[in-house]
Image (cartoon, rainbow over all chains, first blue to last red; front, side, top):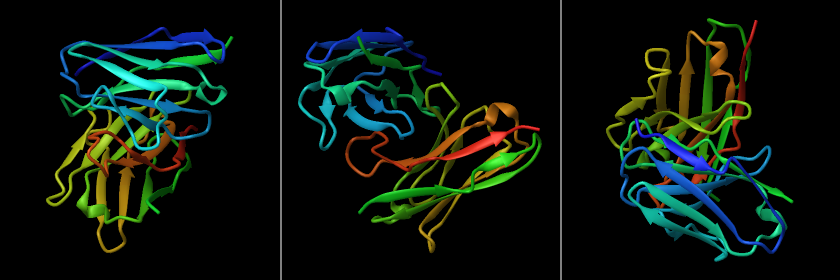
Length: 108
Length: 119
């Protein structure tokens, strides 16, 4: 099973700042990584697929990068609605699909 | 509009059973691989089970293998998860999800249904 480790667990920033979230996998997954955003009481929402492709309707302040075992989600300038929990997920080697434990992005 | 709506959650005693349903609208469920994903309180999502399009090959997480059964009813355009021998650690919000586009990711999710296993 591929283990995904996200860092930091919590990120405290202010609106307008740049956010950088990390996801590391226990083995190489090429570019088969997705990022999701989840707000309280809601289902996860797909942001980025195949490491760097924005899903439909996702603003261009969200970007993803990386391949192999190291991946990054960047939010270029935080909007108030971006404060949420973010998860990475791999599809390279399934079953099982696996998710990271999440990074909580909170307002400083 | 493409939509997934889960139902069937509730409170059940350890060792009990529950059947979750997921009604799809706006697309033909049998044409797509469908998944169940759960999320325990305060934890990240956990993939539970998948059923492929067409032949309907099924897959399960080790944590539920032998206890849970995924199935679908094409006529009702619905997905199901039969959960037997429930344990406290099965307590979670259960989502159905699918991949409708070229993303190869879980791009459509339902709103979830809560399952609580407690005596």
